[in-house]
Image 1 (cartoon, helix red, strand yellow):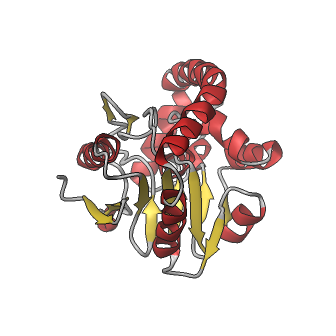
Image 2 (image 1 turned 30 degrees about the horizontal axis):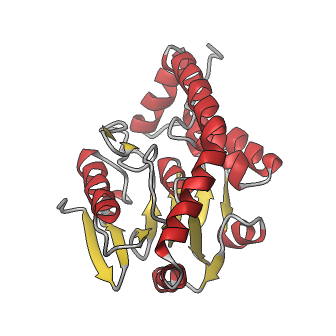
Amino acid sequence: MSETVKTEVRGRVLVIRLEREEKRNAIDVELAEGIDEALNRLEDDPELWVGVITGTKSVFCAGTDMRAGVHSTDRGGQYGIIRRYRTKPLIAAVEGAALGGGFEVVLSCDLVVASKTAEFGLPEVKRSLVPICGGLFRAPKALPRNVARELLLTGDSIDAKRAYKLGLASILSNAGDALDDAVGLAERICSNGPVAVRETMRFLASLDAPDEAHGWDETLESEDVIRNAEDTREGVMAFFEKRPPNWSGR
């Protein structure tokens, strides 16, 4: 098991913790492989019925480690989770920031529990990037379309209260309580028939499949444009040099 991903079993619930707090849980190769290993365990162990993924008390996940790039796994796709087919529900328990790829991890989950300290955003555009891990098409499904446009075009974030009001989060928790509340939600799911839960998951995935396929095709097209843009190189360089970017529009 990865040193930066820890797991804990609570009854039939598998808790997955991201623990790279010194880097704000930014996802590098080790973290992605750890997420993949934990979710493989959830899927393959018949005694585990629901998963909860969480960060630390101060941050959920700040997205991709820019020095490492996006790492993919065979079963999970990007970060070990983004393109994973799952038959068991996964709940995101969010304390602090879930930004960029971190928000895309949240959007890959089935339900969200947000602490009052949580914030959600897709700031890629601030560096002349676009979300390439599902955010471009999953955000407009999880949020009202105009709110998703706001996040995608401004790069700004929304706080937990607004996320709860808009329906992104099912539960708004007090600071520090997101994990316990998420486990409580998971236990409510576990009290139901597991075969019926799995079949519901299969049905919901089948409804999303056409939109997912189209979304990935369009994301790849956007990624190709961004990869060859001068502004992308400038945005990334400005990030590492900790200065405002100088855009050329090319």
